[in-house]
Image 1 (cartoon, chains in turn blue, yellow):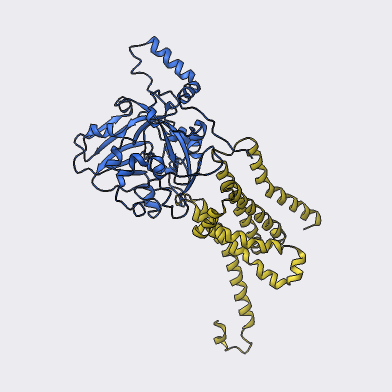
Image 2 (cartoon, one colour; image 1 turned 90 degrees about the vertical axis):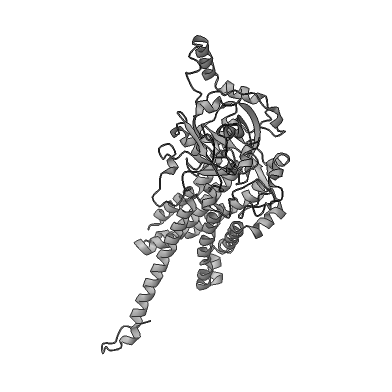
Length: 318
Length: 218
């Protein structure tokens, strides 16, 4: 029996590893920069697989070993590409993450449609290592690159009436093969995929607007070119390949809640004491490890986020 | 079918039923079990349990539809292979997934309907496997043995429900298995009804004198 184990990769090595894997692209980029300093900024926007260097924010470092890049990019839930774990990796090529625009509107003073390249320059990029807990009972530890979502939201100036934020994923059956309607239409979600957060959750410093992972531009199967990462919630809350961010007064409808309301609540905070109706959430399998480990309250971020839910019955608001 | 033909058929079925295990072994050897090997192995063995179980349930419909006699001779072999894969599936859950955490597993069996029904299916397979020999048929008597082995329908339903209840709603795969099961059981119901109607009408065929139409209606 072969059980893959994650190596004890020390934090600082990861970015270097990614750069190492992409050393050709990196050298070409460096050469282009050296030869044509004037045009370097406009030319060659970062595409999938290219390095996206950013300083590591050590405040978020974890004692846990980082998941192997190979595992984090070949074992994914991204139903727009298919229901199997390897579908996103197999079909990732059909998604075109450039050019890309994201519309930010709703209850805001200054609605605007941003180009992805402008988003990348909006705030200083940083790298953060977060735990990622899937509602299915497995987890990873991933170094993400981005900046707090609050930086983007502050730009559009939410009005006083704004209470929630809705995220909408790209809807395009050409790029997302599983959005095509099947013969019997037995599977799939109600496209486009939508997710949502309360405004205070969206403004929380942990909520990361994410453009990269492992020191490189976000791979398509991980939600290129732009996603959110909300580390204290189950993975499906972290919407991928976002084309629209809308501020609302009403709680937005979310994709999984629509297919199984009793199973996937709006909050979906990681909580070992509140089971999924069909399985326990008390333990999880960390990808790369053999024995199950205990699931932590709010995925280990209780100190930072528990106050958001003080006085709430978390069994009721699951 | 000739003796030789029957032998070849058995060899082919043995090879086909062992192939999934061989492929799994090959993938394990190559480290090709995805990032979550335990989950992959569990699902692989579960998938093949259901496929072989449904294949065993397809043998009688083949006889009904095409009047072939040979499929029925494969039922025992296919049933035993389904039990074999179900047992492996269970062992992976016991050893690799939960590593003998009895309390946790006991709670799951009681609390989680998909596990309860999966355990039911596996448990019901045990008496069928135990009475799969010619000697057992003799000891039980043909009629009682046949009655006992109708449990396979319950096992089929439990197995498909197990998959339906554990999979996420957006996953169409378990619905295909359910459709196949409904088809296979439906053919039996249709055949049974057809034969019963034929028997009834034979028994109540009006006498040449005629006039007894009332007795026709059941």
